Image 1 (cartoon, rainbow, N blue to C red):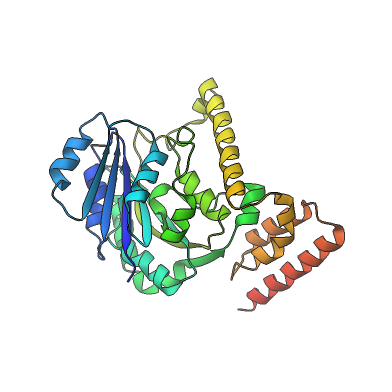
Image 2 (image 1 turned 60 degrees about the horizontal axis):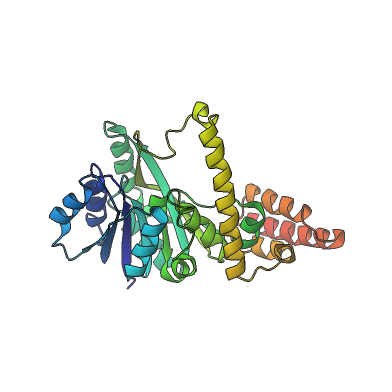
Length: 324
């Protein structure tokens, strides 16, 4: 039986952290462990956590004295975990009750699944409609396989296009063997926030087989303190946003360079010959996948005969999958 870990990162979300932890503890299938990493909170988070869960054997608290950012919490939580499947949850979000039961069905049915992300439902504290929609989806669990898609491998495609094949932190889970190729990750200052980029891009670049489960199994809280959910077009025009965008591009460049070195992708152009073979790791590619890989192929440095041959391989495979 697969052991499971829920890794919750928290910084100054004392108003929400209990709801997050309780959503992990209240699953229809229990997590083997719930790890909460408090990243040097200056509000009442630590007091709340210690009073509520200090004696709870299922909850492991890691209290940091200094704030170092989200990636630091991922690194620490992962190193303290024992699960075969690691699930990530932000402290202002919540799981649907059958989140773990649902994703475990996928991991058990598909041993090749290395990385899984599900759908999410946005909500606000006063928004009652979100809970109604989530309740209605619980009735669909018997048909869960209708919502699963194997997206195959994406190392070559992601390396060249930087396409983000994933979703927010709280929707992400992965097998331990994949997490160990990604974490611990350096460059803590680069990823004080948005460290889910390290998980999503990292999983693609280390060759993980990605699956999606298009059920809204996570409640994503909308509030005034969301780091990115509340940005407006006016904000983006300000100098600080321009600088932040520039710094993010540099951080992504460092991330891709590091994984390229780790995986020995010395010359990414040499990998273009693998484009048709990576495409064929997707059991049921859609037209978007097909166009994306064709575009990558014809913009590559391959010779024209090789491009034609690869295009034919991909087209033949695409047509064969359409028969089913």
